[in-house]
Image (cartoon, rainbow, N blue to C red; front, top):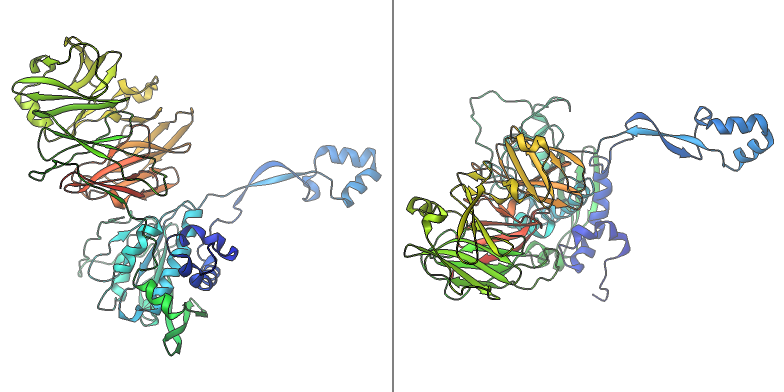
Length: 599
């Protein structure tokens, strides 16, 4: 192509179209624009004006009763000037305000990947997904995509560059049924906006489905959002009413050329449009995935000497430094990965360094240009320093008993992430066995107080729950609450684990809540807004909870342990596959790196 920029007519869709090549974006342009106009009335970006809610300023238009009192005084004292201002539209009116809540529901799309949708139907689905993703993003919502067939629907989400390859790879050998559609939408929230992309054959069978209640009905959360599954229905059980009835968009090719279909008819409700398809050559490359700009993660190779039996890496961010620490295949191997800015469009490959210590790694932390670790070797605790040497004794030897470290405690720590090792002046601080231990330069160990009761749990020490590591004074309610989490100057607390009060670093108060049986494992910031990161032990789902909704971080789900969340930045790390740690943005869910801890 001679051009290198997206045409101005497609500028509103520049975001989702960035997931495909420029040639395919231009070829899909007519489909995208016509479909956006067709779907717009049923998938609004904003709601109507809402209920009147007083006045909120002044304007130069309105009804007579909305004129400012000063204008009426002008009419009495200087009627000619009043008439002049009226003709020239210079009079001031009270501007009414309206109460309108932003749409909260998710955009849920069910796609038919059966034989009848192969080819032209899949191209229509591609254009519709791009349109709906843009509308969901503008509305501050989330797009979930589920493929019908082969049992319970598994939902996928994320940016188009991550979502489209998964959608394209989903192909089914059999046509879906109306019952599969019903089973997929039966548990949607009433606020969700559901769509079905299919063929006329299935669309004609859907009116037989019983309609659900009105929008005031309630329903449970979408099961398995992100990567989970809806349990198989019991054929003998009573059918629950549908809270959401999907909009059905059916498509089929209607005009053909020597190389294949050239036009497709799209039907939505009682509206039918004939739309042109991209040229055959670019269409074939698109359906093969060759035109997708796969913004895949950067593969970080394992360091030399990381061989041995496979084990859990148990990633952790122990300090404020942008360094991810993980365990190697052996107890004495500590892996440290220097991370870069998560927003870098062309990231460099971060370097993972393998530190070989004699014995089990107990605690570690990166401060400035030093990585300091404590390791247990032959009944002694030794200090390891990588980087600028520490003044004082070259070798530090500690009695494990002074640290509260016996065989039982050491065995438990071996199955958990490395503990944080923090600097306090020239001293080191480490939380072991429910107590903070202070280690001086000369090796003297003193008790520095108890670890917060909320910071110690069945999965070990959790830095984000330790009150003493919060750099400000906590609210009295936070000190009395059952649950606490903090990061970056923001603290959040809750009594039931579901309804959270957040006091931000800027002094603002927020209320966040979720219904899922999950635990909060971290807190990050999206500009001024706080975001809670949750992990469900049963489903192993990771989600970002914010004031305007919940996002499933599907690329970080499935780990056997909770993900690690950075205390000051948006980093999240989860060992989703043994030996592989996914690292990315905890706000957007974008996968940035795949760090390999084994060779």
